[in-house]
Image 1 (cartoon, rainbow, N blue to C red):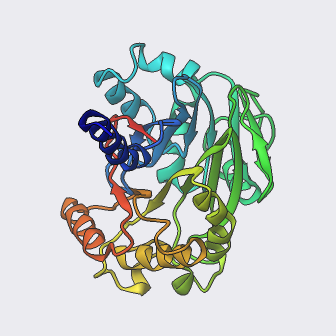
Image 2: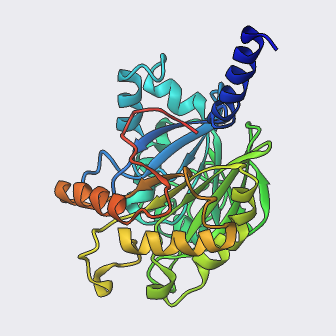
Length: 319
């Protein structure tokens, strides 16, 4: 065997692990329109998600719309006006629960919006119809409910655990119940496109505090997707630092409780499976110093090797 032959064999063997470790090609593009849990009304929970290379976005929650779109336009994420993004790029809304910090952008922007579908579970949809789009608090832009239905929006009630096609996209959504100050119900959305998916959780408390099994059931449902490496990321809230007492969590997570839940998930997938897995941290509450504390505590507790991402308003992510 010549020296040159040995050289090429060694080069090939060395390069094989490097190829294996390459990150898979992105499947989704995400544009955060709002990332906070209050009190800044211009930056509340709302995330645009679309298959990579398309303009067919679903909006996961809609606390802030217009300001977030304007920031994305200013960052050259979109090359059209904010109005065109609102009317043409956003194909529908998945609303996790009807608290105002998750729906106010949708309500305020409804007169300027185009016809599309709002997806929500029964309890959430009933609150939207009875308390917001009811002809009194706000005009009924939907196709059912109280007041005079203007029929701009189609209200589509989701059945928990059932896959539903997202109109005018290639994506589907499956909903799961969450506990947000038990017995108030929030929702997790599994958004799928082909063999790829992302999981978005609305506000949720830990099962141990909520006296609930909702997160446990969710982890059982999505564990196979992590094992198959088809789940690209989990969006999940961490509202408060660890110093927040359980009695004042109000159905939210801390870094300690998030890691506790991720350890339960790891038991289902195998402890090493979550290494390098992307966790997108949402809904951090003010004051601003809390965000830095939460980030520090998450990194210190991260014995699973997950990758924590902290989204910024108007800054694009690829998953």
